[in-house]
Image (cartoon, rainbow, N blue to C red; front, side, top):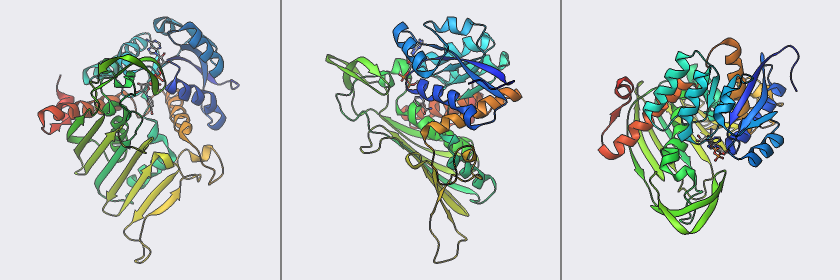
Length: 394
Ligand SMILES: NC(=O)c1ccc[n+]([C@@H]2O[C@H](COP(=O)([O-])OP(=O)(O)OC[C@H]3O[C@@H](n4cnc5c(N)ncnc54)[C@H](O)[C@@H]3O)[C@@H](O)[C@H]2O)c1
């Protein structure tokens, strides 16, 4: 449904599987919940397989489809290119879209390397288009409320962030070498896939990283090749194997510019943890905890609570005063994973209407990529790497 008299933003999306589904759903639902100044139109979706993309277009409500992303970008009835392809395609697509004068919305991590990320940022800036990167977890109302508590001084000076992103879907050694484990396609393993989200949450809530040092480990070094893949999984070859060149786990410690310390752990070998994206922040006046699998809730502790009653309180962030929550249901009527995408896309549309690139944008993407690069380097040099010197280096 297209709103009366609203400016339309015609979307061209490249890719249509896991994130393609999440983004398509968000475009379809955003105007239902938010009074945005602009209206997204699902103009065209692109895939490589005619039958597959046609079926996806019909199911998800896209008006047309293409099988060549360059043709999609060249179309003059497209205003924004949304990139939901694996990481190795982001740079080429994002730069081509910017050069064609299209706004660009890209999945994380922005690129395979810091150099690529910088080139993407240069292209969007040179061509004056709006840009945003999909770090959707910061758009959970509870995380947004954590940000408010920190900004209004309720937690005081921050001492620690302890973040982990734990999964277990590749623990079986027979799990195949899907694109997420193929270095040529994804660039890194848990680092770019999981730690990138924790880095974004830390930058959002605590501040800029000063320096990091970390370790990467690959527990299963040889896996069956993949014959057919879909979403996170795939069908394993019976007789062909390949070397795994990406990390199964990434651990790092960090100092922040404001003096806080961070410990981070991302792994796909934490049995029992399906999508355990969590953090705890400790400050001089209180602490905050969040867990994406219980995303409506924020645990908060204040040192100045009455003695005897001190302890973490569990807040359900579904009241009108919790950012974005008021767009949905009455208090206590919880929301889910897909709403983080709707909230982010509401921000993107608002940014387009105002001519600004909302955060997280490609500046954030470059800074995030610098932290990823520093962890990767430190895992071999065993040194602390300064983020500002990496960002200044050309
Ligand atoms: N924000 C998040 O929480 C989150 C979650 C999952 C994935 N991601 C990111 O989203 C991106 C995609 O991941 P996914 O899980 O959706 O992958 P996926 O394998 O489920 O889907 C990838 C899609 O890209 C298409 N594709 C690949 N190369 C293409 C090309 N050259 N032209 C046209 N289409 C092409 C595939 O056909 C498929 O439709 C990755 O960068 C990943 O890191 C982000």
